[in-house]
Image (cartoon, rainbow, N blue to C red):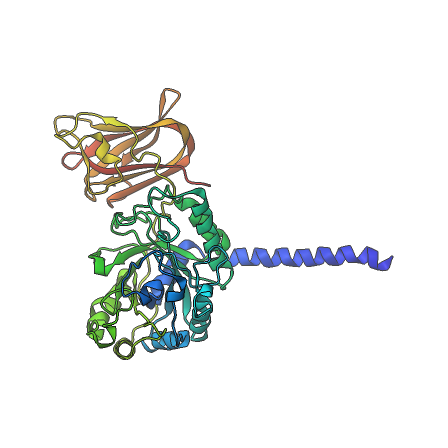
Length: 470
């Protein structure tokens, strides 16, 4: 009887202790701004493109290339980690799956993985263990585009979405704390997979549920303005694709990437190729990017043996000798929360006051930030509106101006049941080009922008309408 009466008390005590532990973890969880600051303070890290393309001499191999092609005969992730350490890097980021869909971990979602190759070893596990042993943070790269599994435009099914979720769940539950997830192949002109085809908000919230302190970075800088975080926690710049960060104007936490060698994946000429200058990388990228709130990630491609070539090892060692100012160097300004929801206004019917020449209404919601709706200069109070097609909940409107300070004063209204309600009226809350307005959720079928004061004629690149999950 004694045991029967005391056992529940022990269970209650244990449950209470568990609850207290979970609450303490919650209390210790860092804010997004703190995580962004921590990321920028890392300053410099190693991108590691190592996957099926390594063995095909092309960055985009045949989607049906057999798993048996992947055969690194002397794989040594500890060599990679020591090389990163020699360059004073603070983290690594490995291509767990690239565009051709080959998974280099022991996934249960597909047979197209490393366990069906001659290696039969979990490369992700070995990478994680090696980098942590050297005191380096661990990031993952993951491609949404997957040509082997036909996860590409006009072929995406619910099963594809479930596969993405299952693969990310494996990566974020089987390898300990992952500080950042770099996603590629989403909403890019070359991939043409939209944030609606694979719902961004669903994936973003899945990642944050599995690992609340994992930063989500989408490599989408080519499309979105540099003044706001559209579908990413960190603004990215692919240097080799002409995406240059402004070290004088950037105010967002940022990432800039570039390969040390001639391309992202290893090529047969790499052992004797001339590499990028360590001095130039330090003086023109690593050192100036830190004060500009940007970390620099340098790609180093291992060869078909699974080792980094000697010329690359030498370059990394020289970088470490030239670069000495590591760690915190600048406070990152606190930015608006990332925009992660579906744009309800995209491609919906638009109308407005008289436009200037061909630059008519639908240029303001065509999902192209390089085009604009231009009001005709003869109109004293220009307006623009979009019909969402049905009543729906709304809680955010984002205006992207043509220029940073062109739109001076304006009114935003939502129409519900034939009645217009003002959600904002006044001077622009920011001199930045992108103006984000969040407000309590309300229902509406139309949204209207009325320009009350403008420098020159009104010219609006995009108006986005959203309902963020609360």
